[in-house]
Image (cartoon, rainbow, N blue to C red; front, side, top):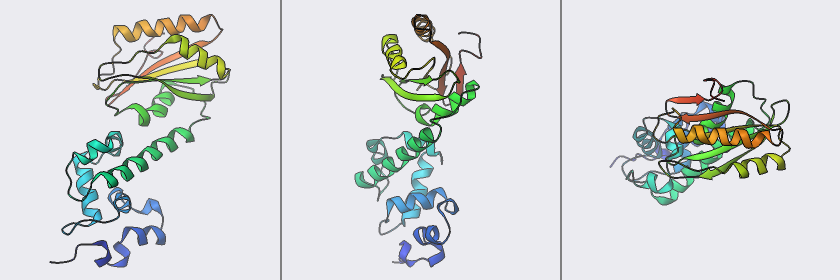
Length: 229
């Protein structure tokens, strides 16, 4: 049988050697994943397995990043078991955290700033998460936090917890954000009621609720842009 392992390839085609000779940005997504996968099976190289994995998620790294270790294993790609799935999930989670950390001191000027900030974190999650951004008087982000984690159909965020966190971080402005796993980004009646409760609670402490952003596969919805806040 012809050796399909990476070691049998020309040096220029090997992902690790290519990265060392050039830079991480010179590698394709499948080549970067191949480095994480490390080795293939008797029939396919690590790059082949990477391409097969990417094909399962329509070459969408965001969707791949939303998969749990169990879900990656359940794709039943021969050569990608639990250990490799753990490595992939951990690496992609680091990428998400790096994106969020890079924007930690971002100054918010419009709704798209918030949507972009949280899209990588929330957009493709299969359960609903509710997050809050705490800003200073210049609308610079001082802190962000996942406030609550729900199920497939919804989550409940306690306004008291949000206000407490805002006071802890000396925030003068708040932006709340959650995802809709269904993909539909239109707010529900419950979303509108919760927004009003948080807005009213914040007023007592001279804190302003600037916006409520809903993110999903279709994009995002801004309460402020739609005049609902």
